[in-house]
Image 1: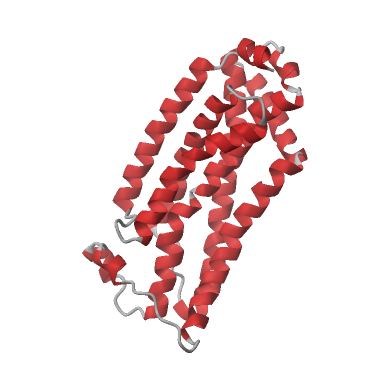
Image 2: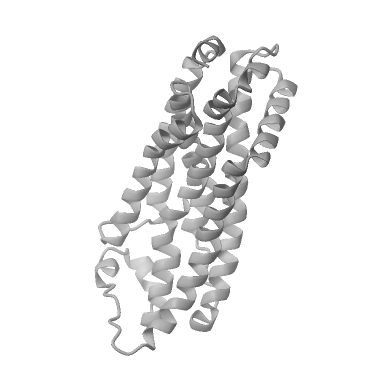
Length: 273
């Protein structure tokens, strides 16, 4: 495989993403909301809410019932305000964090495949002396790299913001825990690859960025299911469960990317453009 050609494709696609306001605006605004505004607001909101007259403290007993004994023991001595902050910022926000790598990978991939067809700029690279596999690999990596970078940077920003905002209530550094570290290093890349695979397959069948992005967005449903499961107290994202979820996402991602690379043909793209 010609890695020099692949690097050229990656560089070209990343420059196109940076120059596109329609792609960059959601890639900046959505992570900022999730990684800074939400943890800052939640870290400051609950303590202030407790001091308001007539406010009912949320019932967290349903969530406590599903916690394993070893985790539950770590919460001994926490006040109600501290428990709410930990549950919200550490547990409830965990599956929502995975939306970030999924969104970044899907948006960049949709722009790289369907978006280029829509702008009529794909022909120039299709006729270059590269194989279909090299072209496919370059375009997939050009979407995966920013997704991983945004996840890592977002994780750091989220941790700093959460600890600073909740410090008056917590009085300690409570974030991250091992579950989050495994999620960022193991589950987040799998989620990005899963979104990539779905977007690549969809992009080969449609001719516009909006169509590819909207149809591939269905892949967010498993993440929403994790959010609802935690909120309802049905499950708890433990370290073990996070490892299992990551393995499942990797298997799905590998399957989708395999289908994508098997069906990717530049001649078909030319015929549809």
